[in-house]
Amino acid sequence: MINPDFPLWLRASHLINFILIGMLLRSGWEILSSMPRLWWRNDCKPGTEWLRFTRRKLPREEGVYTSLMDEKSLSPLIGLPGRENIGLGRHWHGISVMLWVLNGLVYVVLLFATGLWRRIIPTSWSVFGEAWESIRMYLGFRAPAIEHFDPYDAAQMLAYTAVIFVLAPLLILTGVAMAPAVRSRFPWYVKLWGGHQGARSLHFILMVLISAFIVMHVGLVFLVHAEHNVVHMVFGTTDTARSAQAFTITIATVVAVVLFWIALSYWSLADRARAQRFTAGVSEIGRRLFLNRMRPRMGRQNTYTDDDISEFHWTNGLPPTEDESPEWVEARDDAWRGYSLTIGDDLSGAEKTLALDELTELPRTSYVAVHTCMQGWSATSRWTGVRLRDLLEVLGPQPEGAHYVLIDSYGLAQKMYDNRPREPFYAVLDLDTVYEDDTILAYERNGTPLETHLGAPARLRVESNHGYKHVKWVRSIRWIADYAEYGDGRGGTREDSALQAFNGRI
Ligand SMILES: Nc1nc2c(c(=O)[nH]1)N[C@H]1C(S)=C(S)[C@@H](COP(=O)(O)O)O[C@H]1N2
Ligand SMILES: [Mo]
Image (cartoon, rainbow, N blue to C red; front, side, top):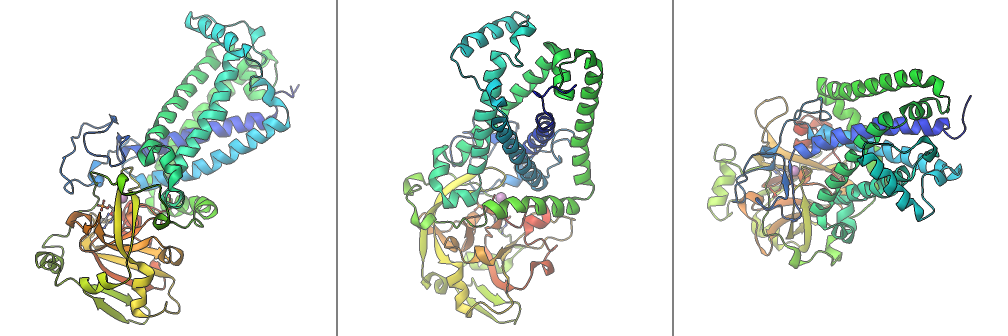
């Protein structure tokens, strides 16, 4: 006998939600473990964290400690996938959130379409008094009688309404605020949350709240009138004679889901290149739908101004050493007189070199922008330089057959994916990104020549993307046909070695 009040769609979306929440939590912990510190201050100055999950002390000096050194390894039983794989963790987070939002939308639409919202959303103020009565009973280790559950009691109505209509939307809104594509297009939106660190810290707090809800919710299902709850959840009936059967199915399902979560980790770790292709490929659907069309406009906004400039700036990647690049070290020691930047076209072999003073004579642009490393830190600076599209014109119009631009560095990758000798750090941009207003080669920060650890004498800024696309100590900028022929073929050093997505818009 089917009770229409627990229709199949409701039970199915409940199960799907359970699977996806687990994936979101586990991949979220993987992301957090790559930089296990939380701030309210947007410059993430060492020592000002309000919470940290690491005993490591941060040096106060700028440019000596890279965020990559701060990564912690999680067990694959906890993190998705675990073992310092933030790239894959980010993709899993993306896939899970896309499915979770879709499932949530279907659920909410059906909830209103079927009128079932009435038993969840309170419509009378008396719900607060009744909920307080229930809570007092629970605190005294007693439970309200079954007549109070219709099918939910007042405390449940309040909790479910808060989770579905407050916590979940806030998690989505703070998550979106951390995307550089969103920030560079709508800077006011990020400021609304207290900047990148405000959004990140709130996202964390909301995660804790939703986790606490899950623990309570699951606990109470089994503690308070379990025989009713499990038949509702599994069969949708009120036939308590089937509760033993429902109980068995529930336990078996939970065990299967937990095994599935762990299997995702081991599947990812077994062949990380394959996992990157799959997960970055699927999550690209979301970027394409929502982020790729947003064009950055930091030069035309006044939300972030010189007043927001950070006191401290984190670093990822250390400057080239004498061994790594004698020519860069020599140029540095000679006030950049020997520095040369190559603008090239790999299709025809054409190239031109520019000295630093030729670079600074090109039309300049300047704006205040927030840098975010996908690991979690941020910093605000005024960047001044030449637009990439203007710089490329030095060589002439866009060559026929060129679909990307590759930027490489005098500095080497911190570590190669397969431990082969370290190669120059590089990033590839697609044409949309190349032509954006806020894709520039910067040679000044906060009105003074670029500091050595931040990429002197010139570094890329791609405001619509996370930091891993912003090549420092730039050596050459070249038109290319396809990035598959360079490095490991993923379109950048962080893509190759940390399995990040080619598209760094979130
Ligand atoms: N040459 C080079 N450029 C690089 C890196 C690097 O390791 N080497 N790291 C990238 C990453 S992941 C980030 S977040 C930014 C950090 O920029 P910052 O050190 O100027 O703050 O640089 C990017 N550019
Ligand atoms: Mo980064």
